[in-house]
Length: 593
Image (tube, rainbow, N blue to C red; front, side):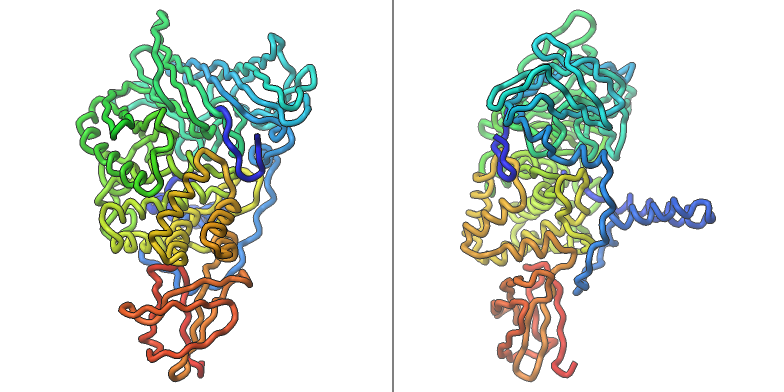
């Protein structure tokens, strides 16, 4: 059953982390292009717009007390964006149950083709449904009860017409045959036919931004997922395919190829379905009764055995906070790829150079991220937030990225203690822009800004301080995952959960951080032995407790957007605010101005 908010799923890390080096290259391009004369001015403007939407401030820049600015109005979405992002009538009229994607991949021709068997239940009477396939690929035929169906294509949308009215509550199945040479697009390619450093074929998918339909036909949206899936991949026999789920068998087809058969026992995002084809070496381990499988290039086997040992500690940390690994039947896999990494469900991909930090850099700049492999921790954290708990619309992507960035903080706390966790999370303030709201318009195929990562994590650290009871906070986190495990949700569902479980109306707090660009600013006015205080915020009903005074004697005050006054023995320059526990701005003034 499809529900507009929480939905039980049926048969089934994003803009990836923003890189300062990439931003620097963009800024360099802007300077070069802009200096090339009026002929290139439009390109320069486009580069400025792009860099302004994704670039990060240099490390060390911290937002003081930013003005409560308004986000610039968004451009009207294109027809293609709406078709990809909107959960329209021809998507909402059916509920996915099962896929069997059976394909043959040809590394030499850089081509693929095959069939996706799609089983679904109708939620209302209708004779049409919408599926998706990138225009670079051909729809060979779509078959229903041995009859080829009529279809129309518009951008990536495929509108399928049945010869009869499909009835509400009934289950139907079609075979979608397709073929072609998929286009490689986006930062990680979508699907890429490449060579490894030794010149061997290396084919991989990573398509969260482009959508799964860039390489296979599916219902390419976020709200509806199949309950389970089978994936059969036929490739040259000297190669290995590492995909999602449990390997149930491989068969030599006698024509120089081998078919690898995988079964996914859980709901799965369409973009999480993954091919990783190469001359991989495999080794295995376990954590209790959870299987751990690793696929790496032969020359990296020994390095991988050493570096991937960190996977156990990561799993122990996240299971400590959120409960059992959510895809136990499928097991956990870590698979080498030539890009940074991606949270493919039960088949996490890894390209972090077998080194700690992020691409051998101190990601947060405070000496903590170099103690662990950032990609193992962050991308695997998505197994809980992104894969198990999934956003039902791209506009709520912070549920994936903000929460998983906060999981990094929890990992640091589990391994190194609370003080280091606070140091780690507060270092992310330098990466927040506060230029636009995190949650955008629903039904558009548009990703939220990079603040969804860092501001999202800082907000959750703030929320912990608002709860102000760690025993309760840990129970809230574990209960949250138990409540929404294997479901697609909206931010409203999280707000409802926290409101109910805490007995507080936290809606204005969520809304201020997620639906407005600016963070709340605590305004303080000092007059002799008194201090007046209020929140400056976009949400008129914003009210949030905060610790003030001195570090050895914090006092909790409860500001609203109206002025209140209390006594204090501290002078203005002595009066502190616990800004390591809350992501807020602070403004101090004397009564005389």
